[in-house]
Length: 126
Image 1 (tube, helix red, strand yellow):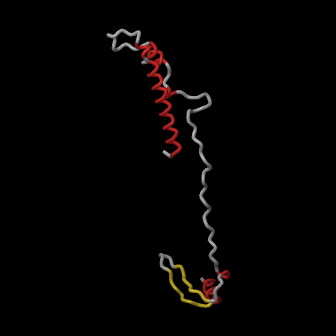
Image 2 (cartoon, helix red, strand yellow):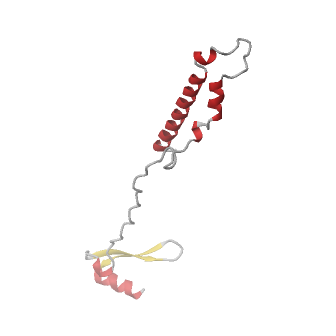
Image 3 (cartoon, one colour):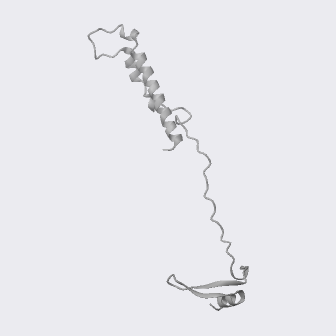
């Protein structure tokens, strides 16, 4: 979970805990226990029974939507692939160049260093 999701979950848990503690404090307040007989350890006071009949606070949903709505920032797009600006044939600015010939099988054959005119003629011949 991301930081925003963890904060949302922690806020929901805190709200449920606070509501649960408030219901327990109201149910077992000294005024509610004063009317109970001392021998009935299993009976619940009337306030506790009323609190148990109410829906659980963890299932409470606001009328407008879920209790915690996460804001999502603008999604980052991948940067475009860089354009290949390698000069080819006449666009090469050097007078001499090393000429390699692509051979099937992955190994290139080197024709050597030659002037630009000879290299272009060798490229056109192939």
